[in-house]
Amino acid sequence: METAKANLPATTAQATSLSTHSFEPPLSDKLSALLTAQDSPVVGPITATALREWLAVPRIDPDLPTTDRVENMIARLSLATKERAVSEREAKERLDLYWRALRDVPLVDLGRAFDDILKSATFMPTPAEVRSKAARYTALRNFRHSRAKHLVWLHDTRWTAPIPEGQAIAA
Image (cartoon, rainbow, N blue to C red):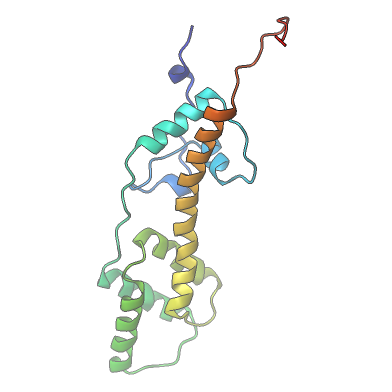
């Protein structure tokens, strides 16, 4: 009889963009989609085992940004958006304000937020707007972890082995 481990869905092949950062172990596209789906299916033992293994990998907090990274992102945004000319002193003060507001946001989420803003903003966003965009990515990462725990719990509490065809169901 084959073990469930031999039939596990690949957890490293075809990693999705949400799982390609070193602080989050990769998942197959199918499992990644399951973690963001709206339904709550009772998963089978193979999927439950794969999710348990994913959850067992210690979560590493993503790196926080450095002053240079925030300055670089803000400078690029100011080039890409409509921005009035500012003095050197004003520019330094603006960078300091953005740094103070964004220094506790995980770098990966901040980078994704800036990518989104570059694609959609006409004017320079406020630090609060950047934080709000970045918070969505942080929330998604936390949701995926919580959802994996929930799906494993559903398996443990509600899954039953299928009854082979031809066998009677005991009353």
